[in-house]
Image 1: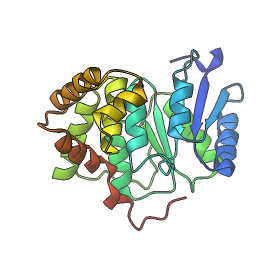
Image 2: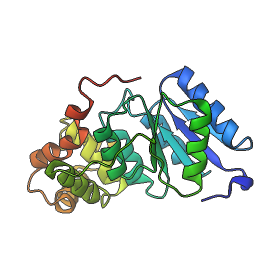
Image 3: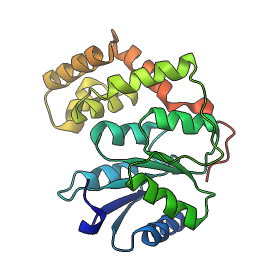
Image 4: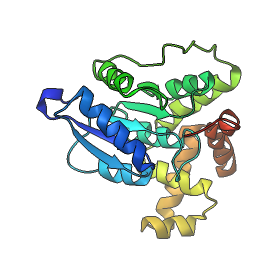
Length: 227
């Protein structure tokens, strides 16, 4: 990680302009000299992360237009495992916080937090701590949580290209369509699919889609008041 004094870079990923501005203000309060870059979607964030200049921290909203549940966090963690990702969300239910941490989040900051608390949380994460709200109580893992955490570990074995293929499989795309989108041959797509099935320890593309779809955790977000 770049030392903060060496002009560190933070990436704010949120589709709400007002909250991007609020996060930018909190970052400036914590570290006035840090470069802050903003992304309005996971796709835009991944493009920025693929650039030549590395980032030292990402601040991610769970409610993004191009992802479901924890899909955005999983994409960032899979493609950039060394990047600390802090969730900043209107969802504050303890189970959601627990799931986010189990998927590798470096912290969880409620959007209801004051700017000074946001700044303190960012400092805490940059110092190497895992930040959670003071009111948060650790949730004992249930069988579903353990299964999802195991799938996250298997997803981490996929290459970025394999992860893209898996996302297209989830969209119901055929090998021919995937090949066209990625500008590769169908044989290459078939090879990727075979590796995906092997690494996820499933026997068919349908099973892969079903198992990975469980990570969306729609039941956790249902009836929650998102920002």
